[in-house]
Image 1 (tube, rainbow, N blue to C red):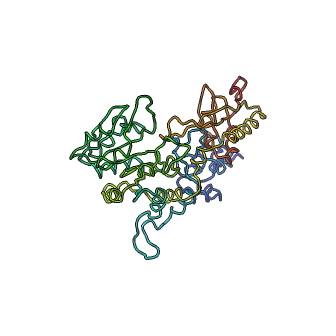
Image 2 (tube, helix red, strand yellow; image 1 turned 90 degrees about the horizontal axis):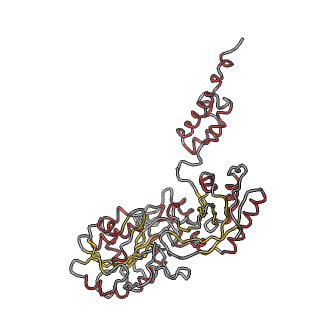
Image 3 (cartoon, rainbow, N blue to C red; image 1 turned 60 degrees about the vertical axis):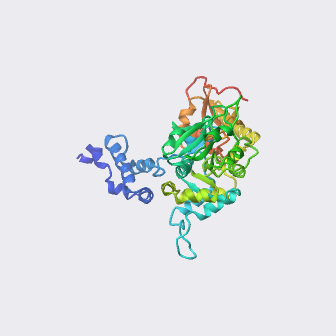
Amino acid sequence: MVTTAEVDPRRRVPRTDAVLADPRLRAAVDRLGRDVVKQQVVAAQARARSGDLAPEAVADAAVAALPGSLSSTAAVLNATGVVLHTNLGRAPLSPAAVDAVTTAAGYADVEFDLVTGRRARRGRGTLDALAAAVPAAESVLAVNNGAAALVLATTALAAGREVVISRGEMVEIGDGFRLPELIASTGARLREVGTTNRTTAGDYAAALGPDTGCILKVHPSNFRVEGFTSAAAVPELARLGVPVVVDIGSGLLAPDPLLPDEPDADTALRAGADLVTASGDKLLGGPQAGLLLGRTDVVERLRRHPLARALRVDKLTLAALEATLRGPVTPTWAALRADPDVLRDRAEALVSALTAEGTPAAVVPSDGAVGGGGAPGLVLPGWAVALAGRYAVALRGGLPAVVGRVERGRCLLDLRCVPAEDDARLLAAVRAVPVQPSGDEGPGKQG
């Protein structure tokens, strides 16, 4: 006698509650939530009913399809050679900063004094660390990004009044956001002085009047103007008798011999700036944040402005920023100073492993860049693994995702921003790309 189950295999597909009873899926419910897990179970059951999957394999298929996390943000190995890659989140956090974020993720004493049991200054440890890092700053404040710092400064100092700025510093800061539009949104009026390539202190002086709120000096961090140029220095502007706001952009807090042309906060303040604004997720190597450093009366004016509440940073940013300021060297610092000889040795080891398996690969010179609008034109010599161009797309879809760059039809994997401990993961990612059937896909000659 033929049973119904033998006639219709779909009858053998396990019930949802029976599949969810699998210990692996029960554990996944605690980690991912019932709805996410059930969605994969239902999908596996549908495959079994269509005949694409054996009924006995439903639980295994559901487990295999579970996401690694509930966030759609994917971790990436940055093999582009660009240290502060805006599209890849700019500065990667240091292990110390990651630990600090984990600690602050629960309840934390963000605005609470554990000794007195009373309310305390928000983020006091972070602000103390920032002040210690820039001795020339009388007072400091942190907001949620560099643009927010500039908006708060111009709003508090010049709303309804004029911001005097050089025409050569009317920059676009990325993704179509232009400085004139950003400042205009605060209710301030721009008073442009000088020319694109030359602006003197006299140009600023001639523009000052009763409506002047502040002078704004912006570092054009993502481009350079060369040739017949000149710009007024901060000490010259400081003598004009109005607040001078200097936007250094990239977040360098003190002079760095590696970046001699990059302005820093401490130097600008010692030169007479009343306020300096900068980003936390660029050369500082920390989380996204806007840093404001300067005279006590100016910073306090910004702190008490109503807009400061809307722009304030959360506890996770405060924790990561403090750990960045107090902790060991950051991944950004290490990547900027990566030894070219070490990079070449690592690249050669990877290429040796790949070519031994029949994968065409070569070691080639590769110039890295600071990125993130910092130190434009500075070349960071290094080395990369060159593969056939088709690897660029395939590696982006792998696990881990690997983002390289394409030059002259080749996929280059620059190791500057890849931690040495991730070389094995990078090698595994390349190995996971399906082998191309016959055909010449050589990467080019070894450098």
